Each structure stands twice: as structure tokens, then as C-alpha cells.
Length: 490
Image: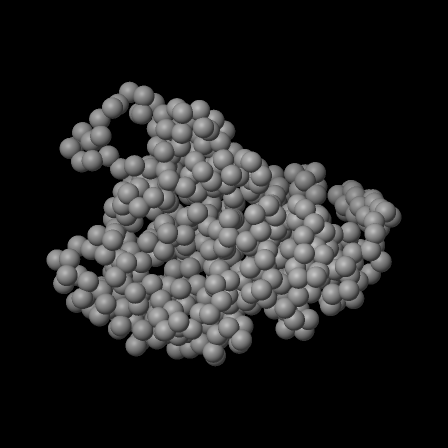
């Protein structure tokens, strides 16, 4: 029965798009794989999983160049990895709407900063920008430092055995963002609600990935009827319930206490949620808006950073000279600040900064950025019409031979000697008006964790020069576990 429903809906959609009146589009003259009447290239992607999808996009870029077009039913998708095109697209002040796949996140995140556009996006960006001010980041740094010390202890307990990086680092980033975003110590709270929240946050990512790679589940009705959709709804209810309870509890605490210190005399830590509650008091945001932004922080500040740290530690372990240079930089910094670096001290760790950037160049956590065009505009003399979808290939952009010498090599010095010539040739946090609002937060968290690890351990790869296969939907992922050994220095 389900198969019949799927087939009927697909046939209706095909005829609807195939016979809709529309003029010729200038994008049809661009290169790309052959398109079938009515359905374009849709059939080519029906059974393509996340690993195949990523490699398919790399092959298409290699075959058709900087700029090519795919047609999915009646929707044209312009793909580009040209820094010139990327600059025009990302710097545009009005074409800032995210592309269709992002809408699959709406049931979880609502239309917060990540998914909103127009006036709502501008208003939310204005409210949230102070959240990442230097003085606010200082209070978050205290949490990052504590969680980094905890991470070091977890790694010490492995006693030099192989460690599957991603699960360990996912715990670290989840605990960090949970405390900085909501003020909740998920690693200390062993209640059933906290454990359920942690487990279901992990599940949601996998379920979204499953939907994205199954084109028949892009229809909301079919998705809600499917086993994957029902499981997603169940997970979502648990995640939303936990976040709602935290928001309500934090609001009660704020109303009943004016103290800036806790019962033990320690200064209370500021959470992003506290800043949102203050905005609510000023009638700048409502309760639903707070929920949207808290859930958005949890999504954007967890998985992406864990992935970035996984690839960065893999590369550091495989390059002993890089590792020792980071260690020496850490040692010199510790000597200057008497063993306890503050947040501002990390600005002096120029080499560690270059290592992180070079890792993000090779393995950007978000390898593709999508936009839906809201108004006609031109890329040079090419007209890009309203409702066109655009996909920016960050992964391919940052490995271009005309931008980077020997682009496949891990060479942090690129970011010290001025090799990066084009400001839109390195965009792991996007760029322009919709650049990642949390990039300073993410960089600080990574510096804090990496310096703590390299200071205490020598890192060794399981296999020298090994690299995992890659998969991607919204976030880049290794197809196999990435193993590193952590040998105590002392």
C-alpha cells in the first residue's frame, strides 16, 4: 500500500512540474549531466547514499568544472566552487534564504537564526550578536576549560590504547554547548531525562541524514507516515520537552534570585539562555523564539565542532613535527601565564590557530552551503532567476590548485605566510551577512581542547598517512572510525 501511495504522489509531482508553464532559463546552457524530460536528473540520485552523494558531487565538479547545473524535476540547482562566484553569492545582502534541504530541520529548530530569513533573521541576528561578545565569551571559556580538563582525564584512562575519536569528542562538545547554551551540566546530571536527551540528540542527526538521502521522504506527508518519520517525531518530543523544562526552570531561578553568586560563593556562570531571557524581558523575543534559538545553538554547536576536532586530531597525530610545534607553543604560553592561560592568551597561539584553519580547509565541517534565490540577480552576465537553488562546494573550493599549492597536503604554514590570496577561498564558517555567528566560540573551544590535549599527550595514529572515506549530507563525516592513541607525556 505504501509503495502505491509513493508511486501515485511521484507521478502527480512529475506531471505537475513537467507541464508547468515556464520560460527558458539561462542556466540550461551551463554544463551538467544529461537531463530527462520532466524529471531532469532526479532518477540519478534515487538510491544514492551519503557516501555516494559526496563522491558523486566531487566527480561532477571534476568533470564539469567550477559551475554546473543539475535539474531536479522542475528545480534547477546551480553548483559552484569558484571563489569569484562564491564571493558574489555569499556577499549578496538579500539572497540569504537557505535552500530546501534545510527545511527538514524546521520541526526541530523552528525558524531561528539558522533557518529564518528577511526581517526575522535580521532581528534575531541583532539580538544574538552580543551573545558572542568578548566579555560574554570569557564566561563561556570557564566552561570550555573545565570540560577540556575532563576530556584529558577521559583520554588518560585509555592508557595509550586506540581511541575512536568521534564518540569521545561528541560527548565533549555536547557537554560544553549544553552548559554554555542552557546552563545545564549534562555530564553531571545522571537523571533519566538527561540521559534520554543526550541519546535522542544523537539519534536525530542520523534520522535527518536518512531522510535527506531518500528522495521519496522529502514529502512531509510520506515522511510522517514512515517508520523513520515516526521515530524522528518521538525523539523530537523528548528533546523539545527537555529544552522546555530547562527554559522554564531557568526562568523561575531568574525570577526568584537576584544573587550573582551561587550558595558556595562562586560567581554564577552566564548561559546563552540567560541572555535570551533578558531579551524576552525587553519584549525583543517570545518564548517560542527562545526555544528556537536554544535548539539551534545545540544543533550548530555540537556536531560540527566534534567533527572538526576529529579531523584536526587525526592530522596532528599523523604529523609529529606539527604536534611538537604546538606543544612548544603551549609550553611557552604556560610559562608566560604561570600555568593557567586565560581566554585572551590564545590569541598569541598563532601556530595552533593556523593548524585549526588548515584542518578546516581540508575538512570543512559543512562541505556544502545551500541558498534559495529570492530575487533575480547576475553572476557576471549570467542571469540567476528567482527560486533557483544554489549549492556552494566549500570542500572543492578550498582544495583548488589555483588557490593553494599542493592543496591535498596538510601544511599549516599556509595561514602564516600569506598563501591564502582570495578572501572567499577559505570559508569554513561561510562568509558575508550569513556567516556563522558562533565561529569565535567554535575556534576558542577547539583551541582550548587541543592545547589541553597536546600539552598532556603525544598523539599517534593507528596507521600512518591513513585517511578515512568521506560522506556528507549537511555535515562532513568520516565513513570509518578515526583512531588515535594518546601517550601521556609525564
